[in-house]
Image (cartoon, rainbow, N blue to C red):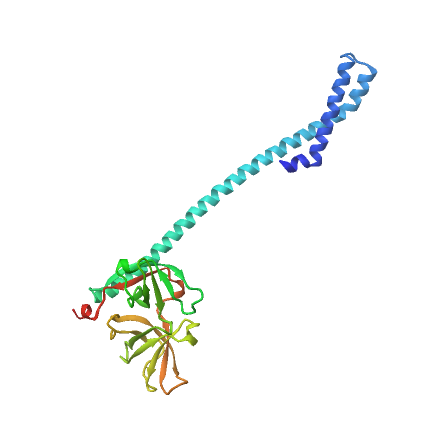
Length: 282
């Protein structure tokens, strides 16, 4: 509307209206009879009437278009609202799908280990300064979480509880150099341990270390926890072998392990609570 008031077309309409009013006043002053003055005025203002009519039609069209634009904008608003609702529904569906996958794999693991107790938790924070993908979860000691508990995504090990606070916990991931757990190759049964390494952590890998140079472990081998630790059960998958390399500092060999799930993208996880070596034995 502001643009319309400032337009040259609108200013011209105002000028013509002013001329028409002036003509009407002149006619009123000279009576309704025909005179030389009124004839002159009529001659002058007849084209003005025609122009005014055309401009009036144009103004009606502009107004109509403006009304149409308003209706168009209203329709756009309605469609954007519907789109927003559909996006929310899609987000809910994806969250539900993710949770179903998480618990489906965990239930398969629980079938082999009926005494396992899982506690679902959300990832509520990440340490951007930590290159080893540590993260914070929404459950703590008040929920039964304790230091050293295994943290899983489905059937895959993603880390351990580094520190349990009353209402939240900090998780150390399996690519952290401070992480270490006994492990074995489920095919060859070779036993050693998995740990993080600062050099390969940037690529998202960890190591299956201290292997013999004659190891039969090969690309694609599955590495799982060995259950030697009192805080970690046997058979939780850590990841798969992506390469076999020789150590530069000694004569041993190590396997490059790709974790079973992308730790950087986790938004939900499970904490294995209440586990002890005695509970597994029973």
